[in-house]
Length: 477
Ligand code: ATP
Ligand code: MG
Image 1 (spheres, protein in one colour):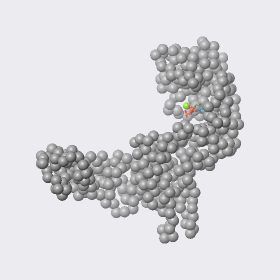
Image 2 (cartoon, protein in one colour):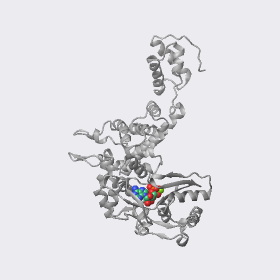
Image 3 (cartoon, helix red, strand yellow):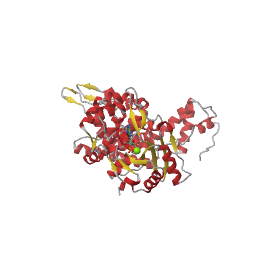
Image 4 (tube, helix red, strand yellow):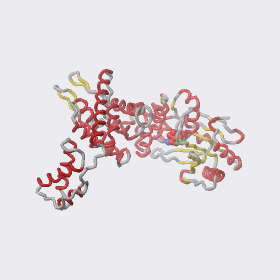
């Protein structure tokens, strides 16, 4: 028996198929990953039915448990339901033909082979029979099994046609190659480069889904290199493409910022599955091309690239259809702060500089340190070790100061309301001035991060501003 259909669910579907005298096959990612022995966290099962997919979904769900809710997408002729960790999608076998200006195919009912032909890659077109007479048989008309062995991404039909029909498949080719550690077969890759321009007809939402999957791979750099080489990157993400290359003046060259960014992304991928930290790694130097300068005396510089970079993030997120929410602000913050620990590690470290960094980074300080460590891409081992040791000192200092002063989740010990009540004033500029003075005094180590000291300073500052306390009770103690 084919081990890919050992799960009980396949037996149930098979019984229903037989009772309904129709035909069904499990196809696509499930079969591919099973033959690769690849763990799949989500248990997505795709079933193709020679006939009515929606009907078979309903009947199967009913047989398992009449309470299961089946979602029907009539426009696509598909239906799916969830059961015991599985997400099972049923689709009627179809034959597709495309017109040049659109991703939307003309669809008719078809045979299993018609359906396999419309699949993106040979390794995704593998099907296993769930019909009683041929149960467990592998149907592999395009040599997908061989391609799995040879670790090759190849389209079932002419790649030029496959990519032109649905250009998203070009990015999917890169995504699967990166995820599985495969290479894209030569002709397939050539077609990819030829058709790169067609990606413009694909919506950014669908593109970013694939890009995010590339970013989440264990070694994402390979994917971005392929995107660059094929010309896709220049179209879908010009800011990143723009970072590539090395300029030389007076015999002095700067590093290739594209390759450097990819190395940082690979480094951080070893440390975290936080997709936003991975995005921050990819984008940390994004403003280098904008800020690049050369001077005879000091060579190449990229002054202010961290600040300019953080300002570029909202625009990039908007164009790529990434979320414009706290995740975006997190990426902005890390890009903005990514040089601070380096500067600290190169100078005499003062407590107040550490407090300021803790205050600005807040709970993201550990992620920032990971980013900084990933940013060390020197090929000189000694230098690399020296940088790491310096960061270890910064980390130790951060820990010490945080333990002593609790700045990470800084909450002002005197709140605006207390200032208002104490001086009997309205909310306004003076309240802000006093609050900032207290915060700065704490960060600079002039007063401790405690209520009494902060309140004393509040009274002093208020007096300097011409205010008189009307309520000298000390509500905080
Ligand atoms: P994973 O779920 O791990 O991303 P998958 O192979 O299941 O991998 P899906 O995007 O879930 O990928 O698609 C399911 C199947 O549908 C694929 O295996 C493939 O056969 C087919 N498919 C998906 N998108 C396309 C497309 N754009 N063109 C052709 N076939 C596609
Ligand atoms: Mg899937």
